Length: 227
Image (tube, rainbow, N blue to C red; front, top):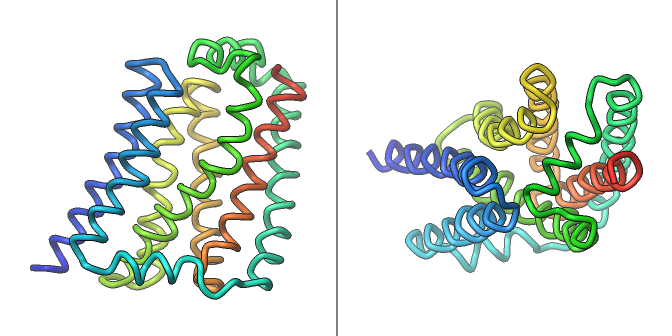
């Protein structure tokens, strides 16, 4: 019963992330509201209170950061460099081929509050803070608890599914249904890759640096081809 309850809670947490993104972007049309709901409520408060409820918060926080893993950092940087290159190359192909309308992407982001004046703060926040909070949530809080009840492949698949699910909302709005689904599929594959990397390097450094560089590729593409 305890295992079943824990799994149901994790499923609820997973869907809450998508609901937060949907409400912030579709209903409020505000990235500020979206980040507030997703990062503060889902990524920070849910794990915080859940960890306090389990009475394991301090030990789990320490396990996320200790020991400092130099080898993991190198793997993360190497994988991140490949992901960043892939993101930028893919964006260039989609825009130069007329598949994605850069003007539509810029208009939508402006409508969400990412005006040229706010582009730099948004960029820094997305690259540094968003990447860290998502890794602490999906490859940390969620994946570790799934592993207590499920085999690693299944746990990685479930955490990867919930990680990619809310990217579908963003992808469809920015790129249309077909390309939104296809790009979400790539996000799912990347989530599985980070889940595998987490198994090799349990602390956050490897997946965070890899994620950070992938998000950096998105931001560089925005600066070069959209704004």
